[in-house]
Length: 193
Image 1: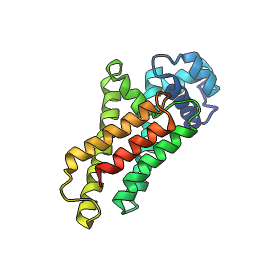
Image 2: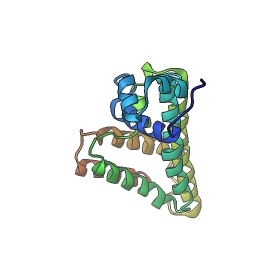
Image 3: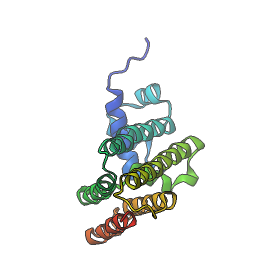
């Protein structure tokens, strides 16, 4: 009798993502995943093939539905200063509501990049380059409209903003308090002033 899937794949990936996000790839066991997803070992292997393949699907889905959507919404604002400020306001706000101190799945994965394969490295690198490109495009748009000073170097500043974003995400996992995270946000705003 052929295997028949009896669960929602997207929902299962979302549940697995929560586990990978909280524990990291290496610390997540198959038992952790099957328990969170509510499926047995046979269903797991039939649907996903391996822990690695599931991790890749989880990371890609997170990137597509979280990061890409977030930055697409910000790009649609057509107000570069507000868009950049909103990123840091949102991240500080998320940090306060993140009781599990999970931070960002993409950033967490980047911190363990030497232990990942080239596909995972590619996903993380591509995502990060797109964030830097977003910042650069917003700075250039702001310079064109006169709301960001023309003497600001878009290449250097976009990388500085990205470094502050990553730093905020890492430090929000319990190393910094709210006031310290707000100081990072203030530094980001200063870079475009």
